[in-house]
Amino acid sequence: MTGETVERTEERRPRVVIADDQELVRTGFRMILTARGIDVVAEAGDGAAAVAAVLRHRPDVALLDIRMPTMDGLEAARRILAQAPDCRVIMLTTFDLDHYVYAALSAGASGFLLKDVTSAHLAAAVRLVDTGDALLAPSITRRLVERFAADAPRPAARPADAPRLHRDLAPLTPREAEVLGLLGRGLSNTELAAELTLSESTVKTHVARIFAKLNLRDRAQAVVLAYETGLVAPGAND
Image (cartoon, rainbow, N blue to C red; front, top):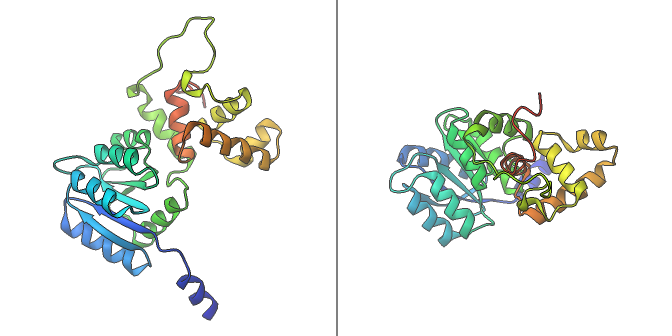
């Protein structure tokens, strides 16, 4: 018991900004997170105030409601991720698989939570994205992308003799492009290793290089990019 207490005391305390136009929601989330060893450094009632709070306090994670006055959460997320790239963004929504979530993932958000999330799940989600992981599993992200891919901008048509890869993927080697394509289908590292007959450590190296070359935050964003660049086509997983 004593060991557990010491371990929790030494656990990292992520710094969070909460943005929601409902004061009761902000208060409830702040109380939940604070009670679980997470520091809420600022609150905001609209998107513009959220951007300002993030730039002022430089938190680890920003919780942003999608629908807010003055500036919505999507635009706030884009500005935050452009100006404070080390901050992780979690979008808050009332609707499961809201079509706005796809746009948020495209902007670089690490995932989304429903507003009726449990206290334990909320705290766990903040800690998860703070470690650099995605809140949505790649397989879930893939299904989300499949659902809304028809609305996503497609790459321009290429001549038959043009290079196979979209220009955004040009830094990748053929093997890395292959790995990204499989990531886009939602495969885990274990599944990637089996598919390519590689060791998991080799797969992890490929994934790390892909993320570094393409400036990707996590596997969820890799799935979105694989579709948006045409590397993976909707329905290719069936």
